[in-house]
Amino acid sequence: MNALAESIVRAENLQKRFKVKGDALGKSGTVHAVNGVTLNIEKGETFGLVGESGCGKSTLGRTLLKVYEPDGGSIYLENTDITRYSRNQMRPIRRRMQMIFQDPYASLNPRFTVGELIAEPMKIYDICPPKERAERVQALLETVGLKPDHIRRYPHEFSGGQRQRIGIARALALDPDFIVCDEPISALDVSIQAQIVNLLEHVQRERGLSYLFIAHDLTMVRHISRRIGVMYMGSLVEVGDADDVCDRPLHPYTQALMSAVPPPDPEAARRKKHIVLEGEVPSPLHLPEGCPFCTRCPYVTWQCKQEKPPLRALDGREVACHHAS
Image (cartoon, rainbow, N blue to C red; front, side, top):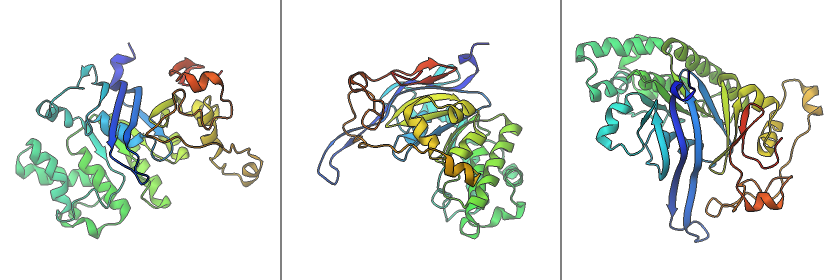
């Protein structure tokens, strides 16, 4: 079967820009938060997205859901182009595309009970009769590992991990096909993070969900993802199988990221060579003319400074580097 026919979400040359009137130095301009990203997320898979803070990961996720309207390129849900869908046209689409937010404290309305929070999407879309909603909410609470009697409590009565479980239940309320997990574990204690990841994996197996999993923790992304995309300054620089990207990175930026991951063995950690990047991080208002990584790359050449490398197939994956081999 054609790979594109199996995709749940696909982006082609996607762009999102933000106008900046003036920063701390009084500079104004345009931030290219998502700068020509092309990717394909297949049905039932978890696609991991990693990169430094401010590289555009969350903006990409929200643009795929059309929370932010794209400034260029195309977005496909399965084989339907939804790029220019109006708000009314997006209404039935939004049932199929949901989001789990980073901060479980800020993403839940403190004035609503847990039952009201989870039932609200059902009311908006009139999914089932009011009498059945309470039963459905209780079933969703059990699915995410909470007790049915929690339905009458308020968010402040729960721990951070429990609140994130509530957020997951709310995202599942409309039976979506695709969920953007926007750093869903970064605000949680380390002891709780594995529980939430295990819950996401369990729900995925039960419901056949597809995830875009955005995170900083490379070890966790490798664990949960089938494929990984590495993002830098609004562009994807490497995409491939999770083990390939982590064990044999091709792009110099990916190599630097992976060198920073400490091995579990202290002896191995002491022997491991760390790549220290030099040079300056470019301003998002004034990206380099060529490769966005050229100001920090140890292998930079004249070609890198003049021509932005396309994302090309190499060794079973895709990499945006003139000299990767």
